[in-house]
Image 1: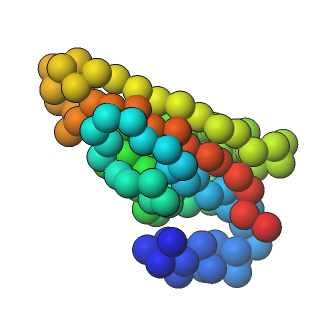
Image 2 (image 1 turned 60 degrees about the vertical axis):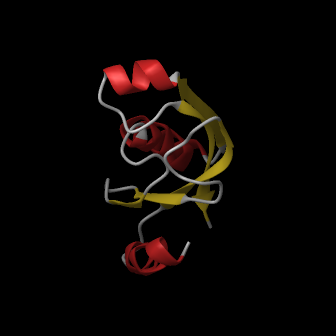
Length: 103
């Protein structure tokens, strides 16, 4: 959380809504550990990471819906290690990411 605190405070100081995505579970190999955080502002600014870049763009889209509705989401992502290597991703595995509006 330390890595995103300053940015989140800055965005909130400007009156922006903010969503926080947190890795809540991993299976097999995963690029980021449980507890990793990724923050998304309503204007589209981002900081932190939940996947080393593999799924962040989808998390951003889902976060904007969470910001609009106020309803949190549990997202799951996965790819086999062999498939991940073939498309140039750092690792395979599965991650579950919880996205919620930061109040």
